[in-house]
Length: 126
Image (cartoon, rainbow, N blue to C red; front, top):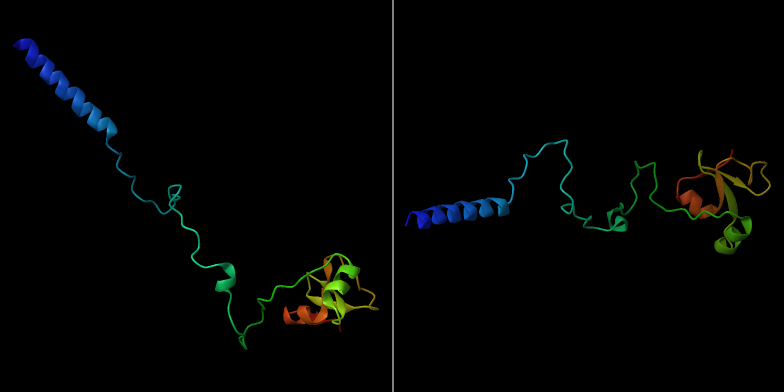
């Protein structure tokens, strides 16, 4: 009888130990400097195109229009059709027309369709 009692106690201890090993650990307290656990982040609910402002604001100085830029004048002429091709200085947002001394020669720039560049906030050289 004594042996059965000892086996019963060992069985209880082993069973309770297994239950403790299988129990999930308590989550750590949330800290504002900790990153969320992997797999808990959700993708944005709307596409970037849907989150852009629609319409124009009189007080807005920036345009949400995407400007197509071309590496060569030939590519731009093919894409622009009857719209004149201009050289856009991408760092200053200044447009240089054909014949201008900076046309195709600024450090930061690309060929663009002039009307699309104006809509995107570029202005012609003075």
